[in-house]
Length: 314
Ligand code: PMV
Image 1 (cartoon, helix red, strand yellow):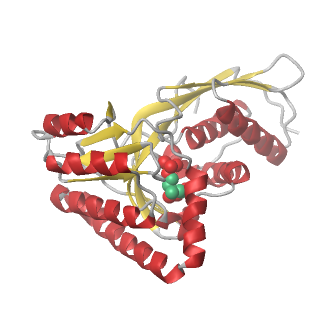
Image 2 (cartoon, protein in one colour; image 1 turned 30 degrees about the horizontal axis):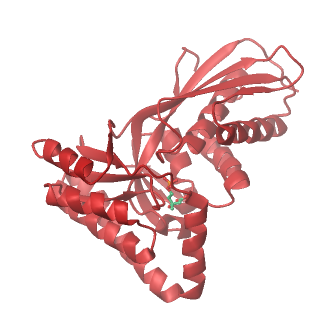
């Protein structure tokens, strides 16, 4: 039994995320492009003096992910000491930046440092993905991977491939629709349609796969015009899948009219955020266009660092 108590307090952070291309198709084993954002979620882990684990989290949803993470970690590594985990986030769980996966990945890393169980990034991915599936039941794991590895990833559903993609400094404008999306419900809705009309939905997924592959090349070449076009086409395909909303469509259309290279919803759809790729000089116009369409601009930088220990332990 491992009960080392050398480190008393560990602080770990993990980034939120935005989907550049490929949502929904990635659940069916196709690739996507996802980027980490500079808005982070922080976990403080300490040994608890009481008899049982203590979780201090503002959201019940977050505390469920922390609880499951502690349980899977302790069972796997035969640990019995109680811990206190506290969460703090720079972004609201309502915006769709992936707070559940960030909280899971950061908690796991903090526990691994506290109990001196070295875990590779892939091991953190595998265990965290197990937690997310245990609670949500569905999901590709793209959000778990990017919270862990950070930067910009080419990711294949379930973690079959997790490859960093060199990403130029992107000028992305992020607009929040004001509506919280329900990701598992949307994923299940697409599954119902997929089962009913597999060849039609698969055709959409195959085109999304092509967009993602072309998007990866465009990113590496810093070809923002092509990347923008691919994003807009991806949005049209997501509309065909029936996961967009009038509000998201409106924000996307106005952003493109305002001068963006391209725009799309980011994530499951049904709400959350849209993203618009712009040149630096058109940025203000695109911001104004999205605001006029009722979007709330989020201050976000992409290609952020993955999991990070904030107080000096490795
Ligand atoms: O709603 P979000 O931001 O968690 O994104 C969901 C993306 C999906 O492809 C629809 C689901 C998944 O797990 O990949």
